[in-house]
Length: 80
Image (cartoon, rainbow, N blue to C red; front, side):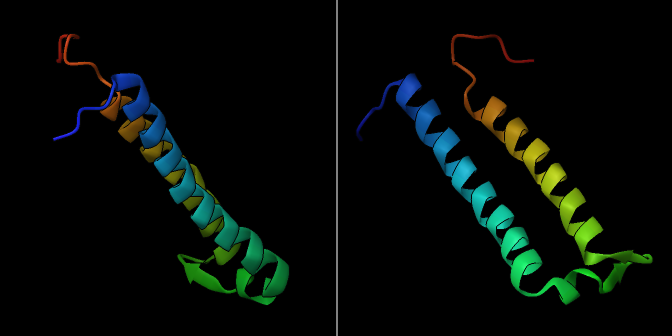
């Protein structure tokens, strides 16, 4: 098995998570630009797709940040 340095692993993990977020954000932008009427559709509890998707992006960013923080822990650090 090929070992990679922690710095390289952290960088690759960060780029992979960024790419994942970028796909979801690009979806938001494309739907807003080319199918704006979809954003007006009520999807959840009286909220339209624009609000739900926007809050979903914020939540996704938070979750991805937690995954990055967890993934970048060093084995030398004490884990709680």
